[in-house]
Image 1: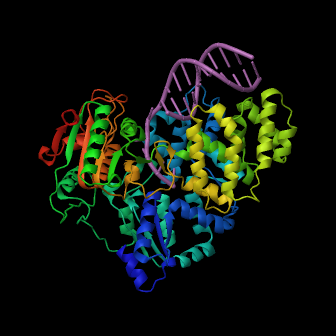
Image 2: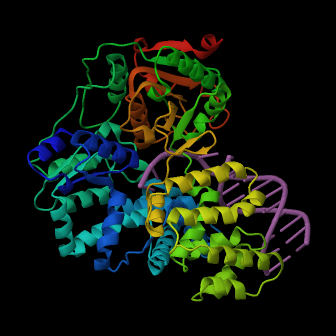
Image 3: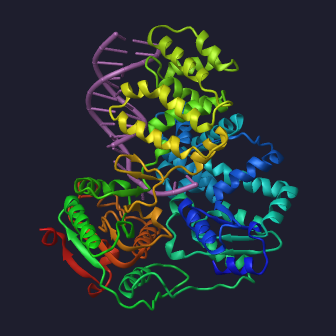
Length: 605
DNA sequence: GCTAAAAATGTTTTT
DNA sequence: CATTTTTAGC
């Protein structure tokens, strides 16, 4: 940040500075801080690598044959396509069971992000599918073909295509480089090989580039992040000075002692020892709870106590590994009437009702979007998978609404087709603002939702919130692209969280989504062996790599806390590996005197 | 043959 | 808990 200020003060126009990072929350945080320092007069550009790629490709993609109106696929779109491909490949598998479509997607995606052949990924991480490598390669080829025929672009393609654009079109590369002369990348340990290449390409000859990262906080290896990028950057830009930041301005020493203790268990290369001038502070707590309910009760009662001591709810966070770890707590909070926002985990854009409505809008933008068409068709009564396929084939190349009316069908299917045709012809994307269009679609689908979903009131509320969030868009296409790349990420008890930053709400968040943020008080749920580190079963010990990643995950969680930290471990949990009944091995490895060891049961009673 | 309802299954984490 | 596969039903 200081470099940013210095650059601007030394006369560099703010708009020639580009800030990039991997996660949206880190990007938001980064841009907000920059705006805070520089004032609003000169907005700095920046965002995630993906959103930057989206903008650049819309603008210059023509140079590599990509039309500006390309459609972005989200993860579940990709799953759906691969599901079809998987079904087609079943015969070729000759009786062998193919992995789930999500697994195939993960293999293909890793191969792209790490820029290594599928064969390597499978032999390293999925050796049980070694026999199927050639099938995966066929699947990859079909998946690529499917996308390129339709000008569909998935998350990985955004990066691949940006690299190709910058490499194959020197004119475009020169233009982009001249408009962003100074490049800064935050959370560099989370970038993958493609993003590192983009960084190098954008830096170009001028080499005006700075990256910030902490290898101890690398927690995205599962999607191909490569924290060695940090060291590689150091080698590539030899003249770049390395500044190690060891003084910590956030946490009290008691918390840093735990953080240092965790870090000393890592096999990391850039060793640090964190210290602070903030003083010792209270000891972090290591709290034993009987089960998840007791864990929830302890956390809730502590939150109430802290609020009584003057700590606002918004200054308190509860962190966990997976979204479901917070379920019990959510019930408890609802019971006590404590408001909260929950980040991470469940994704709205992938929940059925939102996809239902957006599929209709996608058809308005691109009538040939057969992924969206399938969804629009099959969500109606009377039309199933094979019916949809027949209708899709019939409709190919025909005007959509007319075709729907002319298709020969009877009974429920006929009624459904008429309803779709009526709804689609009623929506007028050219005359209405995108948000209004969305609103009409919601209204038109409401009767169907009421029969289809038991919890339709909640879903309708979600959609109404979504309409509100979309008010700022001027084109349907950019609205859809943004919703895919930057979906609303938080929820409240009753659904989608709208913009209400004023409210004093407790924060529940996955550790992954908490990166870069800080709170006065932090609770970590399920700091339990089997969860952190995650262990699938008794006889299945995790390998060193994933063990290390989990250690870093706990490190990230611990270092979010400024003054107060409680690590809670339930002895019994409802699912998953039973019978561990131990705190995380990473915590057991630390000297006991670093913690106040408590029992939640004594506490709550 | 195709759909719709019931059982089974398999779980991070993000763009 | 929500999605996918299996099974029954039309």
